[in-house]
Amino acid sequence: MSRLCEEFHCLPTEAVRELEEGIPGLAYDVLELRAYARAKAALDAAEKKEDVPHSPMVARVWGVMHELKKRRGAR
Image (cartoon, rainbow, N blue to C red; front, side, top):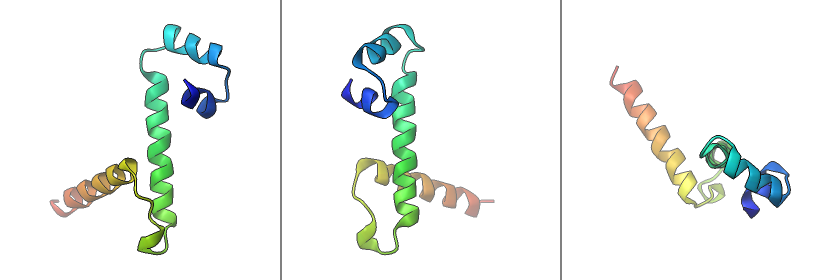
């Protein structure tokens, strides 16, 4: 709940209403996509290996980048 309120700049009552009456899972999907975008931006901005944050989402970005590179090489 706190994360939804923080991310969407809303009150807890609004977050609860969205979870109960909104499209199922949409708020959580948006949270995940935003976290992915932040992780990708952090990777893009890193100038040294030490600048890369360690998190599960950064690992996911690395995995997606690796898969895309692999697919491009298969063509």
